[in-house]
Length: 124
Image 1 (cartoon, rainbow, N blue to C red):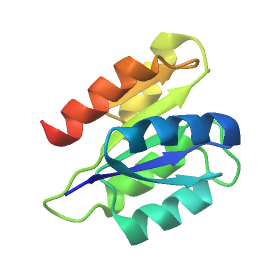
Image 2 (tube, rainbow, N blue to C red; image 1 turned 30 degrees about the vertical axis):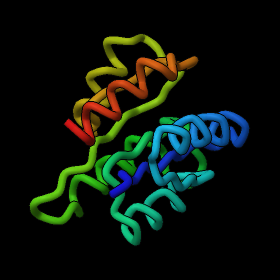
Image 3 (cartoon, rainbow, N blue to C red; image 1 turned 90 degrees about the horizontal axis):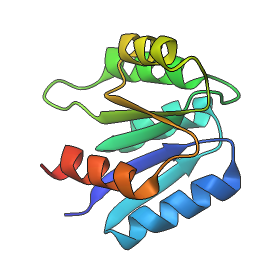
Image 4 (tube, helix red, strand yellow; image 1 turned 90 degrees about the vertical axis):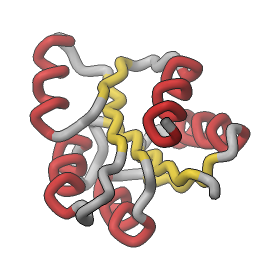
């Protein structure tokens, strides 16, 4: 059974490239251009993992992560990864942890390292 990954980012080109990469690694991928669509897709589709840009229109990544953690079904905890260009790193790490993220990656992301983390996180 293929694992499901939600990618939410308002940068359409980056989202498309990352989606293609994960689809090539046997993930079923859906994308969202903003936080509101991300929340709708997450609720309806229940992915195994979600990569969320922090600065998105509609609802930012912190808001999306908090809502996901508050509404997750018992027995299932999705892997949440923040993708951000925000600084300073220590402050961002604390905000991400507080919102419920499992990991935060600085832009531009190392896609290979990110893929290893996601694959291990959802299949390990």
